[in-house]
Length: 440
Image 1 (cartoon, rainbow, N blue to C red):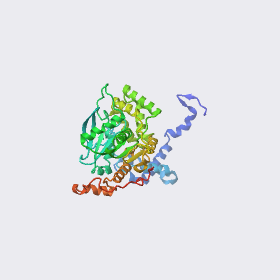
Image 2: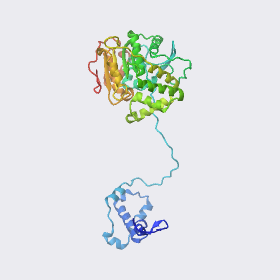
Image 3: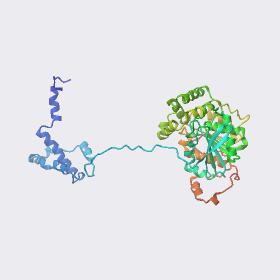
């Protein structure tokens, strides 16, 4: 460390070191700075605007002495760093700009897309159900059932996908909401006894009677997939096909039971806590959803926080955690309807779908694992729509197969595109239409 005494807050021994570099009080230092300005003006004169009169007066050769002009060695040359810095000068006019105020503008938050759905109230033995209808009711029916923490709006982005909109020309979709799970639903009464999973499945009969549906295609996710599977076991003649995502056929294990009980108590006592919110995000997306799609994860976090009734959700969680085993097996009773069993490679329910597939008949079931996603409907809608369309075609339903046919199909008139629904020959899928998936 340099020797020196502290006088007035500075080291006197360093005064000579810093004086030449920080204080341009010598005539030679001033000349050196002006020489650099003169060379910059000669080499980069096109970059300066003619209106910058103040700058041109400073950066002029008249600031140099005659002796300096005669001696070229005294004129400093431009190094690479100085050239690069001067090359960053803007070619635009250097007009004065007055900054009056600053206003923050935030981008619009991602939201669920709103489809053309007409909501209807269906009376059942355990209260009313909210059912949203999308499409022409004269056409074959697709009944959807949602997962925990959601309602029919979770299907809107998928069914409004460009490929699925063409499919809806042949079908009518009925979105069933579990009791008290629709948006804006009031809290259920304290004396209300929430239906069990079997009773929730039985409520679908009231939906079929209300709309005059004889049979339908089921499309369920998570808890909704379990409900549709229970209905198909009890009423096999009313179910033509099932597309089930993250479906489980067994009862809840001890770890799931403990987590869900804690979530249910927190929802009733304190509302949507951070612990419940993290569990719902894991339940739907798996681990680290923000790393895959930050906007999508934030949209669902905001939805769970603002649009979910905590009390009603706790009742549905209690019913789901008390579910019984489906009691199906390849050697005994099983689902008679063809099943498209889907899961995501990053989904926490992947093992449940494998166990569920092992209890189905191989000739009427297809297991698919979609790569790079946990919530398949949101993260990979193109692959799911392709698989679903081909699955329906294999069951005898008319559905376009390629984007070219989809575009041509939209341009057809109503008279040209009316065809009987189940009169084409049945074609079973023997090969997975998606290369990244795995079929068992």
